Image (cartoon, rainbow, N blue to C red; front, side, top):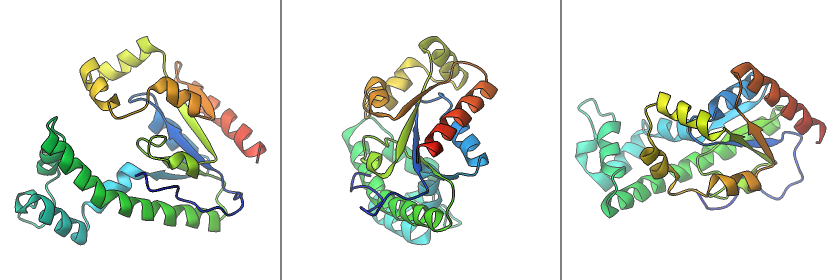
Length: 215
């Protein structure tokens, strides 16, 4: 998703857009969910993209790219078969992944544009933009602020282990990304998550109050 920001050059809206980023298991979803409970509109690009996999026109286009084997007997898409095709380490898998992104990303971007416009029209207090590779894919220009979650290394290793991830898996997922040091430097606010979930919620509320007061 690198075809430019979602918004145009119109004056700053009273509905700020807050991008939320963070390493795996850093608490990003917890932060986004809490912000949503405080009145924000949570736009999760991953969930929007996944929802597109149920659309008949998307299934038809993916079948033309990857063959009939990705469709199940009931007409739905086999996500496990699709994953087998696009998430390998070989160049063919990488090519198929780019093809899949070429189908899903423009549709996802259009939906995000529509939802942001609706939130502004409805005068919602703020939008939470949750997009993979937000900084790498130029979504930074869409956001009024970017919040980056940070977890101490030892705690992060514990959280990753609880999800069943090892260092190799984390390295694989980080291969296409900026370093987290670079991401923190490019963010508006860095939010540490080294305590309890309640402490994280209070910190988020404080940062939100500061964000809204600065508008």
